[in-house]
Length: 441
Image 1: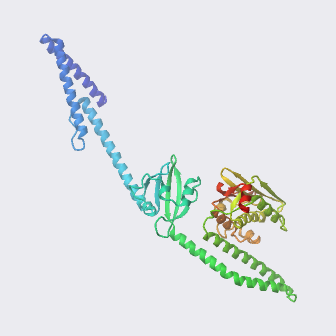
Image 2 (image 1 turned 180 degrees about the vertical axis):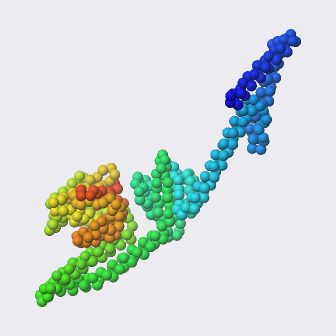
Image 3 (image 1 turned 90 degrees about the vertical axis):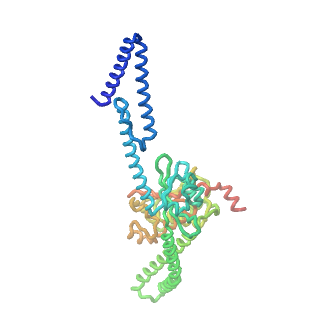
């Protein structure tokens, strides 16, 4: 029999004994009920005394020993002692885990901020406080966009695509840069990761300056070389054996000129900020012009279709938009066989405007898609060089789209073709009538 059951049997026997003893004593004195009542009063007093001892010990259990009581009361006290020990054990484990968590987060080289569903700061580690100038008490419960008011971050936080981080300048007076990335978890909660990328950004600036300066310095001698090669090719007395090498040198010089031109354009795009306004661009007319350029090639896909599904026009820098769209169409034309087809599509919905170029070329392996917009990155180096590509077209497209608050989406399947889609925000779209008024006004 378990101790608890024995205690209850003992309590029942004690109560029955008290009743019998009180009744017997009352019968001896000629008042059975009076004796029973006295016995029950004494038993109740004993119960109340034990209850008082238990309550006093519960209030002072941090330093007082538990009362030494037998029976049911002793079993109750023993259960409380076991629960208290278990609670203290789990509390100590929880405190240890919290201390380890605090030590680990304090040792992180990156900042961590926990946000609730209302974008309010719930907790942040020491590095986040240093990088974002957060105060431990005053900033808890504040909305993060009220403390970090960089427009790029506010737009990033309001969106739904957190796959890529956003880079902003530091809130302090120092000329620094922070990389911010959000990771959703739980029920609407967000984990904000903060990293100091000042050194990387400065190295990137040095690299851009070097490329821009080197490209600028190479342009003049390359122009001279191209001029002499052109003159040499037109020379009537040129040895026939030299005509082939001269023609190849001219082709390589033209390719180098194209690379330098693209490098200078890319450097210019990287050094300029996002375009706030612009002029209305008739995307339908631009798409028709690009289709005409493809059909004018000596070798081109047999079908180049246009799908214009929206009359809305795109506000931005017209030469840059033309360059980005032209690069996408040019790539599709280069890598689509003569028996293939290209489709140029423009449409708009509640999410904004979308320009897509779809081809039936050889496709792109999925492992290459994340790196397509890197400088000089080639999926097939031999074929890219044969088609005369510089490896900078998609990098230019990415930076043009970033300057217009847009993004590039790439979908591809091996031996089935590729689809490059430019997604523009709704504020970049205007009706054709409004565009005409803006242009003439």
